[in-house]
Figure 1: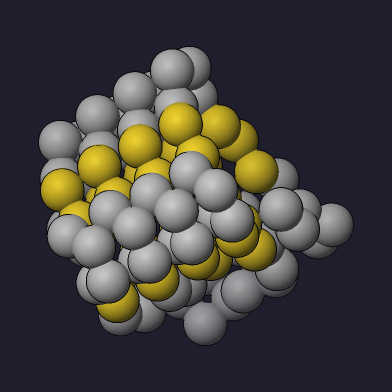
Figure 2: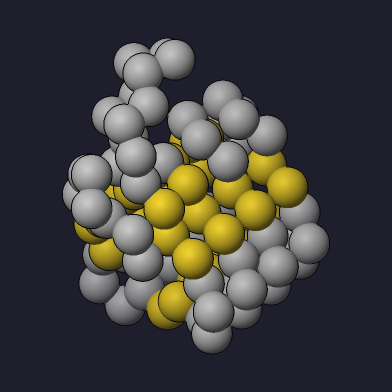
Length: 91
């Protein structure tokens, strides 16, 4: 985890797999806060990389996923293993 510049919030009953990387930094291209917010009951699979994003409750992110900047993942979404979620996406 690298939260030197901004906050990382992790909700209740959330599981981070082995070697998950969380990165925050100042990011103003879309006036996004540059922090990571992960809701309740979220699973993030092994070796996934998460950057400046918001993940709502009850989300499943498979192994080896990359979630790029300014992404919003809404409640109940499943991100399949080895997926790359492009910058600015709303799922």
